[in-house]
Length: 324
Ligand code: PBG
Image 1 (cartoon, rainbow, N blue to C red):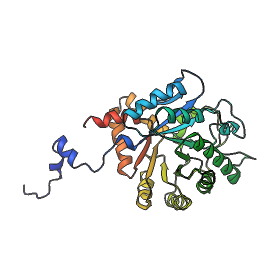
Image 2 (cartoon, rainbow, N blue to C red):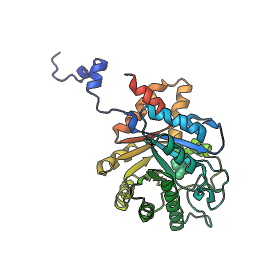
Image 3 (cartoon, rainbow, N blue to C red):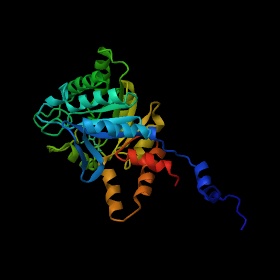
């Protein structure tokens, strides 16, 4: 046979595959989500997703130290409330678990970037990301609380705040309020294109509580692709430092679009339900776990994610050190 082009030449051995690889995963790309709670000695795995951990501060520090040693440079903190109410009172309390966690990480692992999730759902009894009045989530009043929450976290030492609520105009209001307090170095990682997805189930189990209704009046419609670019334009105008697409694995088209139009780093969140699918499939022997994990994560990077929030961050650091 006389063929000129033989793409298989570059696939013939691990070394050839390495030198021709277009995508490389690196530990500093991973953002590690952690749930933090009050108490002592708490280290609770999510039943459907063991790598989603709820930790008290004393357990959090050694865990984050381990992550830092593996090369991870950013954590993403979610608070678990002691007491939920309709106004998310605990979200603004200086003594809440997240504030303590921020202070502890900054003190013990000063080089680790602490990013905090900014939304009210861990703290509200109705489970919405904002206030909930007459069956609706009011935009502007919610934004005002989110800006207070951002200032609280930034003053405690968080270097990045990550609004995940999808209210309109929250990035500019948060930026404005941070700057007013002189917190000009605090960065904003905006959940820019966050969809009303079915895949947040295990996450909501970790937080506990019940959601009244759904989040479709503020999170994006999964049927929409171009609308993500509108959200992107707004967030960039409002001063977002990093933009995020969420979920990641089922929204690779959106991720690729956002990457093409963004001059700031693009993050993607491989969310709890997507991660749980891998656990379940592997448990049932449908595929090999490590290979699936690497493939899905690499696909998210290939589609355009500079940063990937993933519950598998620690494991992935070990996996990418071994050559496939
Ligand atoms: C809440 C928030 C959610 C997630 C991150 N921040 C859930 C939601 O919007 O209901 C989901 C993350 C995951 O599923 O891993 N604002």
